Length: 393
Image (tube, rainbow, N blue to C red; front, side, top):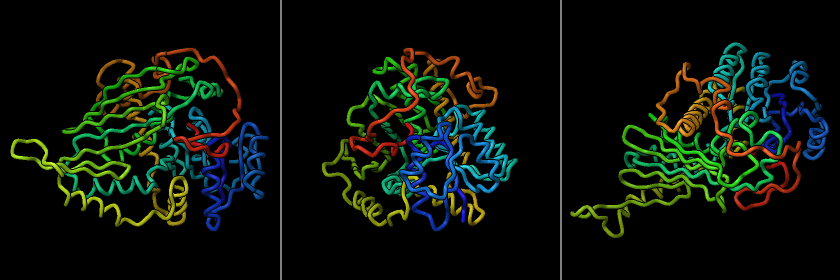
């Protein structure tokens, strides 16, 4: 039985806890940790974690000496130190997004993984979605042809009070705005679907949140050898209509399942009706895939548990998390310096180091409030969820 600790009992922790509870025949949660123990105790009671002991600091959890796996669900600025402490103690780590605020911090985590002999997995739970798997299968099949363009809309909406929470809305504590903390999942998916680009250009702004330093809207253009991708990162989009649309030479496929395949006439204009046969092939391919046995956080946690049980690497590891941070860092660098940034970023690049982004980033507005906790229902894409069930975006 794998013994699990959860460090940080904020918004995202119930997603981890419920996933572990759904796999209770393989693991058990024995420790909850939060700087505010009363908060952890309330969650313990709410979710029926009778076997878990509450701690006020993560070194106390490490001192138990019997933890096999820890979920790190704390604010982004703390991920590096907490992950390294557990890894060096030989404890396996599943760390919420973003992996860390800088590439240097990501590499420090990977180095600690190597020293401690434990494994590190960076949360990217959206890879465990049936619609995402169908989209990747369509691209990998080659039926749509060589990719020419990918449009990614990470479209969210947040009101002014969202940035009143103490760690949100500042470059130092949150590490960035919507590009880092909301679009991180879409960036990971783009890299999974298409690989890394050769260069990036970007524009950043704060369009609607006068109580936050950071950007609430960015648009990035990624250049591949013969393709472009665009990423819109936003917390100003009403309706939160998120999408990924892949344009191939022969057909386009979308995350929502739409398939379009044009056929040329002799003059180069599209033939009405398009390639119905290819549309049918791609539609049948998607329909023929078996549903995932576990989705979202439960899907990734199932994989991490299997990795521990079998001695293999997890499907999503720290190198995946680092690649996502590298691309997001390049987007910030391009937007701040108003120039094209080539990838990969090297260790002598100023933005590789911690502190450079915080030092050079624009302060669009001053943060005007700082509350320790927020109450009230949490809603995602128009659907209201019970409190504390949303991602920690």
